[in-house]
Image 1 (tube, rainbow, N blue to C red):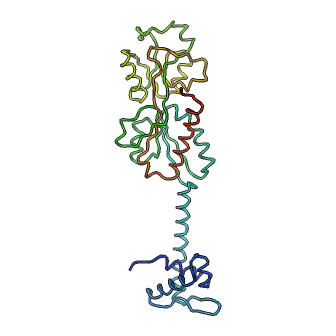
Image 2 (cartoon, rainbow, N blue to C red):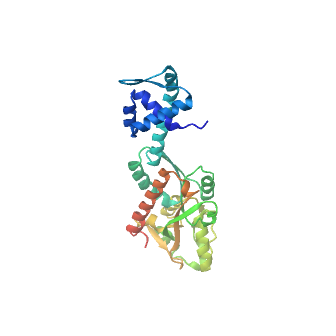
Length: 304
C-alpha cells in the first residue's frame, strides 16, 4: 500500500489540537480539505479515528494507538526538514579545505575569518597536502576544495579547476649574499646556492619550463618544500630562492635576482570534484574565497 504521509500529518494535527478547525489553521489549509483528508485516511485504514463532539473531536481507542505511533515519526520528519533547511542556508555543515602553496596561507586567514562571522556553526577543517595527494583526496571525496599555487591542468580530467588569479614569481636573495658572491652571472649559475622548489612540485615544473625556454639550466641539490621555508633560508643570506613576488612585497631585505627572463607568471587555482554536487556551505566558502582574492590581488593591485 502506498502511504500518503500528508494524510497522517493531518491526522496528527487534528489529534494534537483536538479540533479540525484548529488543525486547518496550523496547516494553513481549508477546513473542508482537513475533513476530506481525515475521511480518506479513515477509509484507507478501515475505521473511525475520532469521535465528533460539539467542542471538537476526541480520539477513538484505535486512534489513540495510531497517534502513539505517529507522534514520534512526525517529530523526526519535522526535525529532518529543519535540519535540511539549515544545511541549505549554511547554518550548519562542514567544509574541508586543502592548502598547497604560500598563497593559500596568505589568503586563508581572511577567508576563514569572514566565513566564521557569517556561518559560525559550519565546521571548517584545513589540511596541507602536496598537490598529487590532495587531488587524490578530492576525487575520493575526502577533501571538498583544494587551493593550489601553480598550474594543475594535468588533473583536469579528474577534477574541476578554476583559475582565480595570475601571480608573478621571481628569484630573490639578500644584499648580504650578493656582497659575498658579487653580481649574478647567468653564464655561470653553478657558482651560486639556489634553493629550488621540490622536483615534483607545480612551481618547479613552471620554473623549468621558463628556464628551458630561455636556454638556462640550474643544477642544484637544494630543494625545499614550501615557500615560507625557502623564504626563511634566503633571509639568512644563504643563497637564492624562487617564490612569488607578493610574499616579499613588504620585505626590503629581499633583492630580486634578474636572470634575464623577467617575472614568471603562475596561477592561483582551486579544484573540486564536482561543483554541482557541493554543499551550500562549500559553495559559500568558494564565493568568499573569490571575493577575498579579488580584493587582495586585484583591487589592491598587488599583481600588476
